[in-house]
Length: 115
Image (cartoon, rainbow, N blue to C red):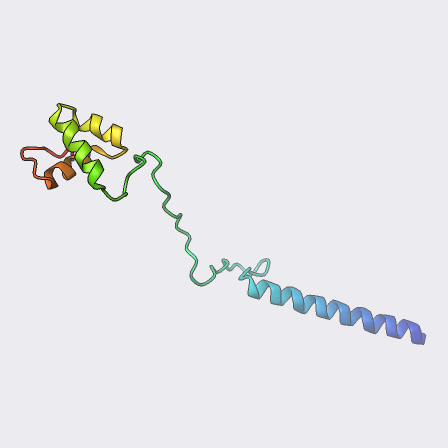
């Protein structure tokens, strides 16, 4: 074997060994099992397999927003004028429960919360 052949063989071995070490390290750092070892991959710390809750798109536009004095005045006026709780809720972008609870908080008696 000539001098050039020995160098080529040595360099090739070095490249293959380095590549194998990098592949092994990559599998460890990403928690991927080696093919055929029968192990399940591990989840990274702090990750969760549970799906995240998404906002219910059916909620009214003002759901969770603070009540303003002006909005309270309007719902009292509409309720005193004979509007139903459902109609008031639709007009204000709130749930019927929110309207009923707010009217009760504002001092109205005999209102049944739709819950």
